[in-house]
Amino acid sequence: MSFFTPIISGIEPCHKILETDSYLSFLEKKPIKAGHCLVLPKLETDFIFDLEEAELSGLMNMARQVARAIRDSIPCKKVAMAVLGLEVRHAHIHLVPVDSAAELNFTAARLIFSEAEFEDTARRIRAAL
Image (cartoon, rainbow, N blue to C red; front, side, top):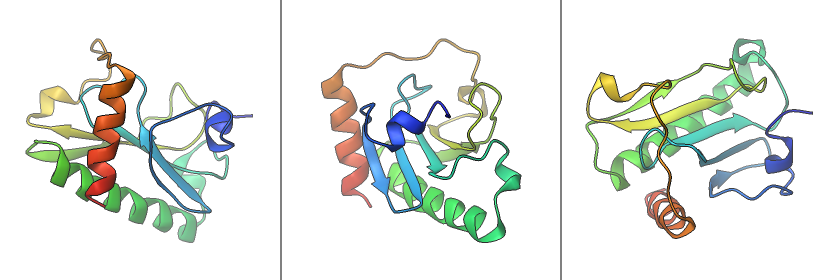
């Protein structure tokens, strides 16, 4: 079972941004910046490049939709994309609104937001979809 399985199954709550039968996007619980989202396939696959071509394409299409919504709802110059997969053995994409490359620092202290702040951020991004 992957770290994301309880989130995918609805057992663990998340601030959902977008969901299809095959993919899910939600706000990162320990974000680098407000609006930091994850996009993942529901199929448990450790290495993103082990996804079949159609699955990888579908994942990237959802990431594009969410990135555009982040760009349109969260003040930023760009939406950075990162694929690490070192801590969680389930392929996923990080989408982070940034104003500089230095902001895409996964070793920096993560931000803490209240439930109300998370819900407001999720609502703004969803509204931009």
